Image (tube, rainbow, N blue to C red):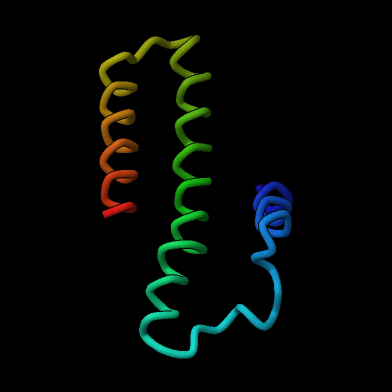
Length: 80
């Protein structure tokens, strides 16, 4: 997971040292909406894919539907 996350961040130019620390409240908000949200999205999607594989062998459609709703709610909240 670390390699995938680092590779994704590097490809987007998000590993530059000069952009690591926010200087004011506005930059901090941007930091939270981009970097931290990106990490959360990667983690959520990784869990979704893992659960999808498990669901294929041990069907749990109710939980898959709940997880899909959680992801949708997170995306809506992220872009508000």
